Image (cartoon, rainbow, N blue to C red; front, side, top):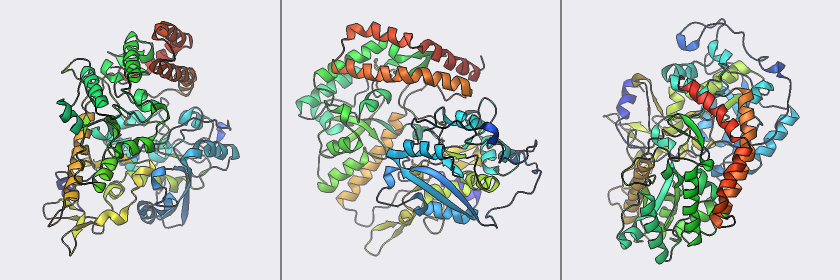
Length: 579
């Protein structure tokens, strides 16, 4: 497929592809010798693949002519349970192996034991070729590099083994700045969320049918939310049910109305800690009032994805925090599949404000680049040059397209006007997705890849989840009520994504490139503060601690060294802002 043809595709539409969250966690690691940091690296020189200069030695082409196996140690996302036994069974991974000529061997462990198994793997010193994320390593990727557990990818980029990633960083330098350490190293093949709406895949969801009954519009302010929740209570549903304490506080469905988070944020370039601000007391008072008066789900502390989905599917919830690819449309699908005439109607709601008409300065948003995620080459990689080429292929245009759509001619076709037609008509007048055989999608594994479609000609990254790439599946000659209803649900989901992204995010502290020492010092301080704040917030909301003690709560945060931790953040924020 030509580049000109692909450019035409960018004017069409696509059904949803929602990508899951990535690795995170905390665990201990072993402190091994740093002498192995560069032992597997090729000889370094000044040549750079992105500049077009030749490397000092001939670089093989893909597919590789000699048999190579690349082992990748990874957690196993729960979304794949019951679908495949291992990531090796995913169609894209098999295709990836074919295209590179390498046997890609994922060694997966269940999410719930990932931290433990990661620690055991490090302790055994029996390292894989590649780690899919190093989140559980104490001190993260910077410390893992210092300890000789992983190696820098910079030499492989400079020697021409990673031309696709080099080209990507050259074309989109802001991502190079995000990924590069303060010492100038690139440590991973990153997972990058490359377009706006993918940064905001969750937000507030509300029962539109109940709002209509109450004569209320979709709430946009805290005052309007208060009125809506009180109306829902009179209708016999749980007014607001967050998935858990994290989704009530950390994911900021309401605290963002004060243009702050409970953690670090910035105000005109000055780093602040939300839980220590006077406005945070106002937020806690509101949450306590809502909890005390039955407007918050009394079981929110013990709730999880399964329980909230069950409540939403049963029509028991008036509003909640939803995810566009999961508990927004999936419970609604279940409702209409049981009763297509159900009056239940959900709709996304924007990030609320205190004053009508204001634009929020912060809200729930993923980082475009997150350290400790993506593919990291271990210091024990058996064939690092080959592994570098295999991992780099994830940033090729071919792999980028295949990841989302599959293989042209097999999983999708191009019509005369260049649109993607991913469906074929059946004899009964219905349509079947040609992409079904490409499922489950590898994106949910959270590996090192770009979330978005590369458009180098326009130096842009296109949204594969919106109405810009491929046409949605036709409804058929005689669409039934269920098909029409599901199409409506998909449209609501897409509208919700836009609403959830409707804030400026200027108060958000961006990802910063800390040194190993500063990153560890900051993490050590915040580890204890986070635990203290998390427990304190819960106590305030549930009435187990009087809000009259808020000043003492703040004093304890300050005594735990929050100012010192913020000073570290401030130093790097100032550097990034050119101060």
